[in-house]
Image (cartoon, rainbow, N blue to C red; front, side, top):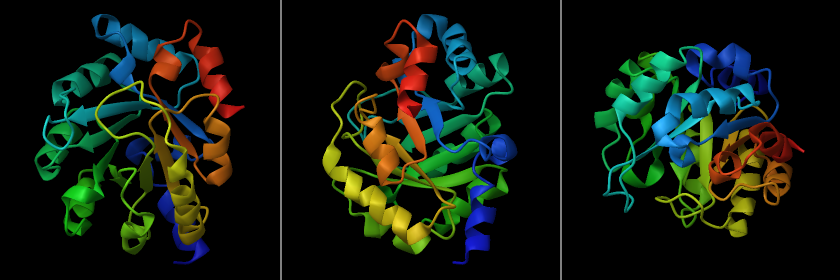
Length: 236
């Protein structure tokens, strides 16, 4: 993979929002899993106004992870309320292929699925791209980084889980940090590397130092009184 290939690929992260997102060195994605769903539109609007770059949508099916969260209807509602918001969908599901088209129709600009549930990611990546979105692959804390190595040249984002997926508010697992460094060294500067789980002002500096340039935060943002200060603390 050449540096030109890497830069071209990075510019595609975020689908129709790629040009705007590519201008931000370290992106912060508030995860709506910790938002107040009784005021979801207002919560999302406030998080973006406070400096969030995109909204992270955690989709759980009760099979791949022991929890149920949200489906395309929630994504569609957020998209209709905030049509200019970039919606980053994280599929924690056993059958990601079944969700790609529904979330594309619901306004998603990016979809990440898990390496643990697919033998060959290529057809899913192509389908996501064909629908105008960017594509990413995630790995759980116990999954080695080298599982992603063959695909780094064909995806827009690698997501490293720093908690065991399924619930918000867990403690950050620092032992995943070398995995991020390995991915960055292998992929170069162009690939977006996302950290998801337990990201806080305390863990964010180490995430960035090891090569993450997209931080997902749930309770570290929506659990605070001042969203702008919370988001800024993740970039500091």
